[in-house]
Image 1 (spheres, rainbow, N blue to C red):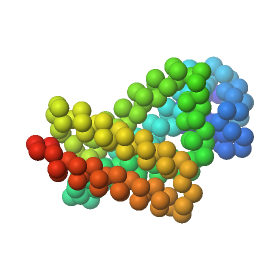
Image 2: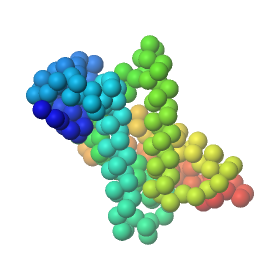
Image 3: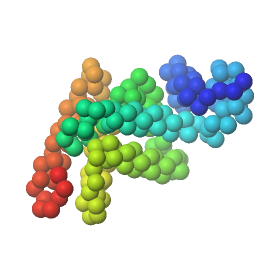
Image 4: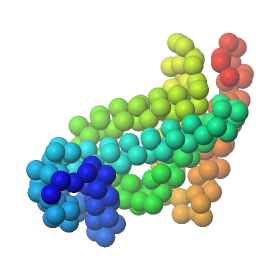
Amino acid sequence: MTVTRDAIVDAALARAEQTSWEAVRLHDIAAALGTTLNGVRAHFREKEEIVDAWFDRADSAMLVHAARPDEAARSTRERLEGAMLAWLDALFAHRHVTRQMILGKLEPGHVHYQVKGVMRVSRTVQWMREAAGRDAVLPWRAIEETVLTGIYVMTFFHWMYDDSPGSVRTREFLRRRLDRAGRLARAMPGAPV
């Protein structure tokens, strides 16, 4: 039986919700989908690629959010906030599994996953900048990317442990960080705001 990439991701997430991300095995996913390991391997060379596919969904949700007609009229700061929240909201249904995925990548023996994780963060931040319509050039682009990466990573880790209704504490955390970054940018001569 031929299965889709999305079906594999969904089956892996469902299995992880029942057990844990660490306990997910590709042979179990193949069996649950009525396919073979080769059917899974046709889409994913290893389990960690399923994590990337999960975060790709969040990137896509963020870009769909950014394409809404009302977004164009919002300020850059509001667009950044909206993009980041859309990204997090896309992961919300499996937040605890997402946390397990990230913690698995941070294990000391997984340096190769950590390097890929840094690249993943960079890619997502680039899409966030695009979603917000940012067009700064060097050296401001590098500064902006560094600050936005810090805000994104801090907010993501805050969100992973936020059990408040609607992640309201994370939303406020993000708002404060973006406001602080905006004040700092306005205070720097020549910085694009």
